[in-house]
Each structure stands twice: as C-alpha cells, then as structure tokens.
Image (cartoon, rainbow, N blue to C red; front, side, top):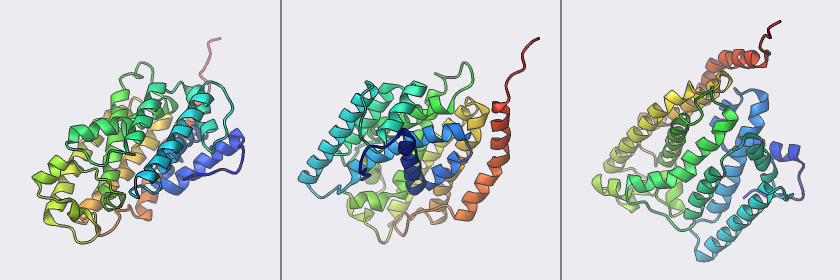
Length: 311
C-alpha cells in the first residue's frame, strides 16, 4: 500500500503518481512517454489513483475477515478524502491532490469514478464470477471506467466525444482481461478467480487446477478461449483510436500493441499461464516504442503550432 509521511505539494503528488506508474505499469508507462509532456502527468495521476486504491484492496487479501474489515475501512477513508477534495477541501494523501486536480481540470465524470470505487469495493467480498456477463459487469467499473476517465485527458476530435466512450470501454476491458489471464496464479493465491465459473466447468477446469505448477490441457484450452475474447475487445477498441486527437494516438496504439503482446507470449507458451508470468521482452517493448516515436513527435509539434489567423 502506498504511504506518505506528510502533506505533499501538487507537484510532488504528480511525481508520486508518475513513480507508481513507472514501477507497477511498465508497459503502459512506456506508452505514456509518447504523449505530449503536458498530458503525461495527468495520465499518471489517473493511473496513480487506480493503483493506490487497488493496492488497498489487494494488501493481505485472502487472510481472513479481519483483514477485509481493515481494507474496507481504508477504502472508506480514500472515498471520504476524495469527496472532500472534489468539494474543494485540502486533503493529506499521496495521490488524491493530483488526481482531484486532473479530474477538475478535464471534467472527468464523477460517475466513472464512483463506478471504479464500486468495483474495488466488490473485490473485498466477491471472489468468483459465475458467467462472463457477471465478469463484464465487474469490469465496467474496474476497467471500462478507467478508459472513460482517460478519455478527456487524451482528448477526442470534434464531435467524437460521446461516440469514443464505447471504444474506450472496450480497450479497458481488453487490458483487464489480458491481466486476468496473465495473473491466474497470482489471483488464486489471493483467493480470487477471474475466470468465469461457467467457462471453467465447460472446459473441465477445477479450482485446484489454478494453483501454480503444471497446467492441464483443459486450463490451456480455457485460457485460449478467454484470450480470443480479449482479442475481440482489442479489435472493437481500434476504431476509437482515430477519434483521439493525433498527439494521443501513438500512445494508445503502442499500449494496445504492448498489452496485446502479452497475449502473444501466452499463446507462444501454449497458453500455460502457470509456468511463469508472461512478459513482453524488453527489446520488443523498445521496438514498439521506437516505431511510434516519429508519429508522436510530429503530432506534438503540430499541436504546439498555433493556427494561422486571417489578416
């Protein structure tokens, strides 16, 4: 869980969020380097808030009801400080001042924030999902809402604001499902399963099969099936990239390729997600970043160029 030793300036809060992103979301952090510098800190603030809350929910998960009660109280504290901050009150928190500043600067929808917090609260008590529809309902807050919060910062072209919301949701779902597949063993260690129980039964997978070790053929087939769903979410998200302003497109294209690369690594391992954590090799990440760097630089220069005025 993130901690702080005292009040932070706004600048220090943004830097704290940047470090959280760099430490815990390396692929996404690399993609954010393709954004214009002024946008990066706001994206880091959104990531930092999501990570901060997720850390509260995950710490000591699976150790019993007393731990769950402590996590619930910590989550209540964040929610209360957030409400105070959004109301204009000063708050002592490592990430909230930067997050609140970003929310207010870009008009991030408060309903999207509430949806995220509701899904994080569900993680305190809900550890299984019967159907994929049930999992999608959870991901509406845990993932789709993150995509929606990012959208005002990334900016859309004129007239695309509302239309772009569904592709943003889809990209959030794609990223989240990719993470679920990569982290099957890690989640099971926290007593959580994000593979729909209905699908597990269909492929003959038992909960005991999810512990780290040898992967059954049924589990590999199940992972391949869910990976197909994730790829469909990626495809449905693609149309939204062109709805973003040009300076944000390279970042999201790179992020999609980087996260999609995790699915490629899983497939290369015959969908065995228990043998080790799927990672995109550093040289591949660097190549993806370099591939989009020229377009990002050109778009950023064009964005800084003031429009010509009529004489």
